[in-house]
Image (cartoon, rainbow, N blue to C red; front, side, top):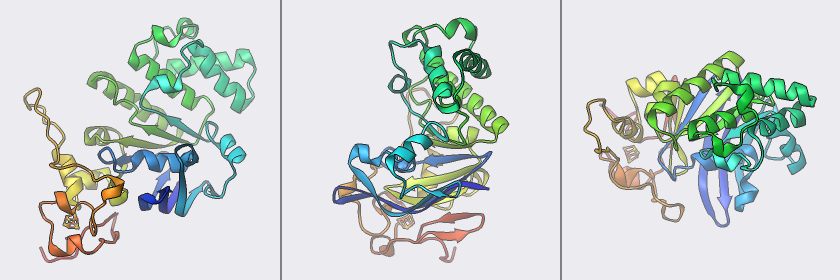
Length: 318
Ligand code: SF4
Protein backbone atom coordinates (compact mmCIF):
# COMPACT_ATOMS: atom_id res chain seq x y z
CA UNK A 1 0.00 0.00 0.00
CA UNK A 2 1.35 3.43 -0.93
CA UNK A 3 2.29 5.52 2.10
CA UNK A 4 3.74 8.36 0.04
CA UNK A 5 2.60 9.28 -3.47
CA UNK A 6 4.52 11.97 -5.33
CA UNK A 7 2.76 13.03 -8.56
CA UNK A 8 4.09 15.39 -11.21
CA UNK A 9 6.38 17.16 -8.75
CA UNK A 10 8.10 20.22 -10.15
CA UNK A 11 10.42 22.40 -8.05
CA UNK A 12 11.49 25.95 -8.83
CA UNK A 13 14.41 27.85 -7.33
CA UNK A 14 14.14 31.44 -8.46
CA UNK A 15 13.56 31.32 -12.20
CA UNK A 16 15.06 27.85 -12.74
CA UNK A 17 13.24 24.53 -12.56
CA UNK A 18 15.60 21.80 -11.36
CA UNK A 19 12.87 19.15 -10.97
CA UNK A 20 10.26 18.43 -13.59
CA UNK A 21 7.30 16.04 -13.30
CA UNK A 22 8.74 13.62 -10.72
CA UNK A 23 6.28 10.81 -9.86
CA UNK A 24 6.74 7.74 -7.66
CA UNK A 25 5.29 6.04 -4.62
CA UNK A 26 6.83 4.59 -1.48
CA UNK A 27 5.09 1.67 0.18
CA UNK A 28 5.05 0.34 3.74
CA UNK A 29 7.58 -2.40 4.39
CA UNK A 30 9.43 -1.54 1.21
CA UNK A 31 12.82 -0.04 0.40
CA UNK A 32 12.67 2.30 -2.56
CA UNK A 33 15.95 3.37 -4.14
CA UNK A 34 16.21 6.90 -5.55
CA UNK A 35 19.20 6.65 -7.85
CA UNK A 36 21.24 8.89 -10.10
CA UNK A 37 24.52 10.75 -10.30
CA UNK A 38 25.15 13.90 -8.37
CA UNK A 39 22.95 16.66 -9.85
CA UNK A 40 20.14 14.33 -10.87
CA UNK A 41 17.70 15.79 -8.32
CA UNK A 42 17.63 13.05 -5.65
CA UNK A 43 18.31 15.24 -2.63
CA UNK A 44 16.05 18.00 -3.92
CA UNK A 45 13.21 15.48 -4.16
CA UNK A 46 13.87 14.53 -0.53
CA UNK A 47 13.89 18.21 0.48
CA UNK A 48 10.52 18.69 -1.24
CA UNK A 49 8.98 15.72 0.60
CA UNK A 50 10.41 16.95 3.91
CA UNK A 51 9.00 20.46 3.35
CA UNK A 52 12.47 21.99 3.50
CA UNK A 53 12.64 23.73 0.12
CA UNK A 54 12.14 27.15 1.74
CA UNK A 55 15.56 26.77 3.40
CA UNK A 56 17.28 26.79 0.02
CA UNK A 57 15.04 29.39 -1.58
CA UNK A 58 12.99 26.80 -3.46
CA UNK A 59 9.27 26.12 -3.82
CA UNK A 60 6.95 23.51 -5.24
CA UNK A 61 5.85 24.70 -8.67
CA UNK A 62 3.69 21.76 -9.75
CA UNK A 63 2.34 18.47 -8.50
CA UNK A 64 1.21 16.88 -5.27
CA UNK A 65 2.81 14.99 -2.38
CA UNK A 66 0.32 12.75 -0.61
CA UNK A 67 1.50 11.22 2.68
CA UNK A 68 -0.87 8.78 4.40
CA UNK A 69 -3.85 10.57 2.85
CA UNK A 70 -2.62 14.07 3.71
CA UNK A 71 -1.61 16.56 1.01
CA UNK A 72 1.73 17.99 2.07
CA UNK A 73 2.24 20.71 -0.52
CA UNK A 74 -0.41 22.85 1.18
CA UNK A 75 0.78 22.15 4.74
CA UNK A 76 1.75 25.14 6.90
CA UNK A 77 5.21 25.07 8.52
CA UNK A 78 4.04 24.38 12.13
CA UNK A 79 2.13 21.28 10.96
CA UNK A 80 5.10 20.20 8.83
CA UNK A 81 7.37 20.57 11.84
CA UNK A 82 5.17 18.13 13.80
CA UNK A 83 5.36 15.66 10.93
CA UNK A 84 9.15 15.85 10.52
CA UNK A 85 11.00 13.69 12.98
CA UNK A 86 7.77 12.14 14.21
CA UNK A 87 6.26 10.50 11.13
CA UNK A 88 8.93 11.23 8.52
CA UNK A 89 12.56 11.08 9.59
CA UNK A 90 15.66 11.86 7.61
CA UNK A 91 19.17 10.43 7.80
CA UNK A 92 21.80 12.56 6.14
CA UNK A 93 25.14 11.64 4.61
CA UNK A 94 27.32 13.24 7.25
CA UNK A 95 26.44 12.19 10.83
CA UNK A 96 28.08 15.33 12.20
CA UNK A 97 25.37 17.49 10.62
CA UNK A 98 22.79 15.59 12.70
CA UNK A 99 24.76 15.22 15.96
CA UNK A 100 25.53 17.98 18.44
CA UNK A 101 29.24 17.57 19.30
CA UNK A 102 28.85 18.86 22.86
CA UNK A 103 25.81 16.77 23.92
CA UNK A 104 26.11 13.14 25.02
CA UNK A 105 24.82 10.80 22.32
CA UNK A 106 22.35 9.10 24.63
CA UNK A 107 20.80 12.44 25.54
CA UNK A 108 20.42 13.26 21.84
CA UNK A 109 18.52 10.02 21.14
CA UNK A 110 16.46 10.40 24.36
CA UNK A 111 15.37 13.90 23.30
CA UNK A 112 13.66 12.55 20.18
CA UNK A 113 11.40 10.10 22.02
CA UNK A 114 10.78 12.58 24.86
CA UNK A 115 9.68 15.24 22.36
CA UNK A 116 7.67 13.11 19.95
CA UNK A 117 6.40 10.26 22.15
CA UNK A 118 6.19 12.15 25.46
CA UNK A 119 8.32 9.57 27.29
CA UNK A 120 9.72 10.16 30.78
CA UNK A 121 13.51 10.50 31.17
CA UNK A 122 14.07 6.89 32.37
CA UNK A 123 11.70 5.44 29.73
CA UNK A 124 13.43 7.44 26.98
CA UNK A 125 16.84 6.23 28.16
CA UNK A 126 15.69 2.60 28.21
CA UNK A 127 14.26 3.01 24.71
CA UNK A 128 17.49 4.59 23.42
CA UNK A 129 19.63 1.78 24.81
CA UNK A 130 17.28 -0.79 23.30
CA UNK A 131 17.52 0.95 19.91
CA UNK A 132 21.32 1.14 20.15
CA UNK A 133 21.40 -2.60 20.81
CA UNK A 134 19.13 -3.25 17.81
CA UNK A 135 21.66 -1.29 15.77
CA UNK A 136 24.31 -3.65 17.11
CA UNK A 137 26.18 -0.95 18.99
CA UNK A 138 28.35 -2.81 21.52
CA UNK A 139 28.15 -1.84 25.21
CA UNK A 140 25.19 0.47 24.54
CA UNK A 141 24.68 1.36 28.20
CA UNK A 142 28.21 2.80 28.49
CA UNK A 143 28.13 4.48 25.09
CA UNK A 144 24.85 6.20 26.02
CA UNK A 145 27.09 8.55 28.05
CA UNK A 146 29.70 9.09 25.33
CA UNK A 147 30.20 12.18 23.17
CA UNK A 148 30.13 11.97 19.35
CA UNK A 149 33.89 12.52 18.98
CA UNK A 150 34.54 9.34 20.98
CA UNK A 151 32.90 7.20 18.28
CA UNK A 152 34.06 6.02 14.84
CA UNK A 153 32.26 7.27 11.71
CA UNK A 154 30.30 4.02 11.40
CA UNK A 155 29.17 4.14 15.06
CA UNK A 156 28.16 7.80 14.71
CA UNK A 157 26.00 6.91 11.71
CA UNK A 158 24.33 4.13 13.74
CA UNK A 159 23.50 6.74 16.40
CA UNK A 160 21.93 8.94 13.72
CA UNK A 161 19.84 5.97 12.57
CA UNK A 162 18.80 5.34 16.21
CA UNK A 163 17.70 9.00 16.41
CA UNK A 164 15.68 8.60 13.21
CA UNK A 165 13.95 5.51 14.62
CA UNK A 166 13.41 6.91 18.12
CA UNK A 167 10.07 8.57 17.35
CA UNK A 168 8.76 5.45 15.59
CA UNK A 169 8.36 7.10 12.16
CA UNK A 170 6.41 5.59 9.26
CA UNK A 171 8.80 6.82 6.58
CA UNK A 172 12.56 7.29 6.66
CA UNK A 173 14.44 9.12 3.94
CA UNK A 174 18.13 8.22 4.02
CA UNK A 175 20.26 10.49 1.82
CA UNK A 176 23.50 8.66 0.88
CA UNK A 177 23.67 7.38 4.49
CA UNK A 178 26.89 5.42 4.07
CA UNK A 179 28.79 7.31 1.39
CA UNK A 180 31.28 8.77 3.86
CA UNK A 181 32.16 5.32 5.27
CA UNK A 182 34.47 2.59 4.08
CA UNK A 183 32.98 -0.20 1.98
CA UNK A 184 32.81 -2.94 4.65
CA UNK A 185 31.17 -0.65 7.22
CA UNK A 186 28.82 0.61 4.47
CA UNK A 187 27.56 -2.89 3.74
CA UNK A 188 27.06 -3.64 7.46
CA UNK A 189 25.06 -0.46 8.09
CA UNK A 190 22.91 -0.92 4.98
CA UNK A 191 22.13 -4.48 6.11
CA UNK A 192 21.16 -3.30 9.61
CA UNK A 193 18.85 -0.67 8.08
CA UNK A 194 17.29 -3.23 5.75
CA UNK A 195 16.62 -5.64 8.65
CA UNK A 196 15.08 -2.92 10.85
CA UNK A 197 12.85 -1.60 8.06
CA UNK A 198 11.57 -5.09 7.27
CA UNK A 199 10.97 -5.96 10.94
CA UNK A 200 9.08 -2.74 11.62
CA UNK A 201 7.17 -2.51 8.34
CA UNK A 202 8.44 1.02 7.65
CA UNK A 203 8.86 2.64 4.28
CA UNK A 204 12.45 3.61 3.46
CA UNK A 205 13.54 5.84 0.61
CA UNK A 206 17.22 5.18 0.11
CA UNK A 207 18.98 7.88 -1.91
CA UNK A 208 22.17 6.68 -3.51
CA UNK A 209 24.38 7.02 -6.57
CA UNK A 210 25.61 3.46 -6.07
CA UNK A 211 23.82 0.66 -7.94
CA UNK A 212 25.71 -1.85 -5.75
CA UNK A 213 23.82 -0.47 -2.72
CA UNK A 214 20.57 -0.69 -4.70
CA UNK A 215 21.23 -4.35 -5.51
CA UNK A 216 21.92 -5.07 -1.83
CA UNK A 217 18.96 -3.27 -0.31
CA UNK A 218 16.15 -2.03 -2.56
CA UNK A 219 12.86 -3.61 -3.64
CA UNK A 220 12.09 -1.01 -6.30
CA UNK A 221 14.11 1.73 -7.96
CA UNK A 222 13.44 5.18 -9.36
CA UNK A 223 16.24 6.34 -11.67
CA UNK A 224 16.52 10.13 -11.93
CA UNK A 225 18.45 12.06 -14.54
CA UNK A 226 18.76 15.87 -14.68
CA UNK A 227 15.58 16.44 -12.69
CA UNK A 228 13.34 13.92 -14.44
CA UNK A 229 12.43 10.27 -13.94
CA UNK A 230 14.26 8.14 -16.52
CA UNK A 231 13.00 4.76 -15.40
CA UNK A 232 11.20 3.09 -12.53
CA UNK A 233 10.89 -0.63 -11.87
CA UNK A 234 11.49 -3.47 -9.45
CA UNK A 235 15.16 -3.95 -8.58
CA UNK A 236 15.05 -7.39 -10.13
CA UNK A 237 13.68 -6.08 -13.45
CA UNK A 238 16.05 -3.10 -13.49
CA UNK A 239 19.08 -5.36 -13.21
CA UNK A 240 17.73 -8.12 -15.46
CA UNK A 241 16.75 -5.79 -18.32
CA UNK A 242 17.30 -2.05 -17.87
CA UNK A 243 15.16 -0.24 -20.44
CA UNK A 244 16.69 3.22 -20.28
CA UNK A 245 20.27 3.64 -21.60
CA UNK A 246 21.11 5.74 -18.51
CA UNK A 247 20.05 2.90 -16.18
CA UNK A 248 22.14 0.48 -18.23
CA UNK A 249 25.14 2.83 -17.93
CA UNK A 250 24.75 3.08 -14.14
CA UNK A 251 24.68 -0.71 -13.87
CA UNK A 252 27.74 -0.99 -16.12
CA UNK A 253 29.62 1.27 -13.65
CA UNK A 254 29.33 -1.21 -10.75
CA UNK A 255 32.91 -2.34 -10.17
CA UNK A 256 33.52 -6.03 -10.88
CA UNK A 257 35.10 -8.10 -8.10
CA UNK A 258 38.20 -8.72 -10.20
CA UNK A 259 38.58 -5.10 -11.28
CA UNK A 260 42.12 -3.77 -10.62
CA UNK A 261 42.26 -1.34 -7.70
CA UNK A 262 42.22 2.31 -8.66
CA UNK A 263 40.28 1.79 -11.91
CA UNK A 264 36.88 3.40 -11.71
CA UNK A 265 34.30 3.14 -14.41
CA UNK A 266 32.18 6.17 -15.17
CA UNK A 267 29.65 7.37 -17.71
CA UNK A 268 31.37 9.69 -20.21
CA UNK A 269 30.35 13.35 -19.76
CA UNK A 270 28.56 14.90 -16.80
CA UNK A 271 24.99 15.58 -15.69
CA UNK A 272 24.09 19.01 -17.13
CA UNK A 273 23.57 21.85 -14.67
CA UNK A 274 20.07 23.22 -14.31
CA UNK A 275 20.92 26.27 -16.43
CA UNK A 276 22.15 24.04 -19.24
CA UNK A 277 19.48 21.35 -19.49
CA UNK A 278 19.52 20.31 -23.16
CA UNK A 279 16.26 20.18 -25.14
CA UNK A 280 14.45 16.90 -25.76
CA UNK A 281 15.83 13.98 -23.77
CA UNK A 282 18.27 15.49 -21.28
CA UNK A 283 20.49 12.41 -21.56
CA UNK A 284 20.94 12.74 -25.33
CA UNK A 285 24.44 14.36 -25.31
CA UNK A 286 25.74 11.32 -23.40
CA UNK A 287 23.63 8.58 -24.97
CA UNK A 288 25.33 6.22 -27.44
CA UNK A 289 21.93 5.34 -28.91
CA UNK A 290 20.69 8.93 -29.41
CA UNK A 291 18.60 9.56 -32.54
CA UNK A 292 17.46 12.76 -34.22
CA UNK A 293 14.18 12.79 -32.34
CA UNK A 294 16.03 12.64 -28.98
CA UNK A 295 17.27 16.24 -29.10
CA UNK A 296 13.93 17.53 -30.38
CA UNK A 297 11.23 15.84 -28.32
CA UNK A 298 10.94 15.10 -24.61
CA UNK A 299 10.31 11.36 -24.21
CA UNK A 300 7.16 10.78 -22.16
CA UNK A 301 7.13 8.36 -19.27
CA UNK A 302 5.37 5.26 -20.58
CA UNK A 303 4.02 2.42 -18.56
CA UNK A 304 5.65 -0.90 -19.40
CA UNK A 305 4.41 -3.21 -16.66
CA UNK A 306 5.70 -3.63 -14.06
CA UNK A 307 7.67 -0.39 -14.58
CA UNK A 308 7.80 2.90 -16.46
CA UNK A 309 10.45 4.36 -18.76
CA UNK A 310 11.02 7.64 -20.62
CA UNK A 311 13.00 6.87 -23.77
CA UNK A 312 12.24 7.18 -27.49
CA UNK A 313 13.76 3.72 -28.04
CA UNK A 314 10.73 2.13 -26.41
CA UNK A 315 8.14 1.10 -28.90
CA UNK A 316 10.63 1.17 -31.79
CA UNK A 317 11.19 -2.02 -33.75
CA UNK A 318 14.09 -4.00 -32.30
FE1 SF4 B 1 19.04 7.90 -25.48
FE2 SF4 B 1 17.14 8.98 -26.99
FE3 SF4 B 1 16.47 7.24 -25.10
FE4 SF4 B 1 17.32 9.68 -24.46
S1 SF4 B 1 15.45 9.17 -25.58
S2 SF4 B 1 17.94 7.79 -23.53
S3 SF4 B 1 18.86 10.05 -26.02
S4 SF4 B 1 17.71 6.84 -26.94
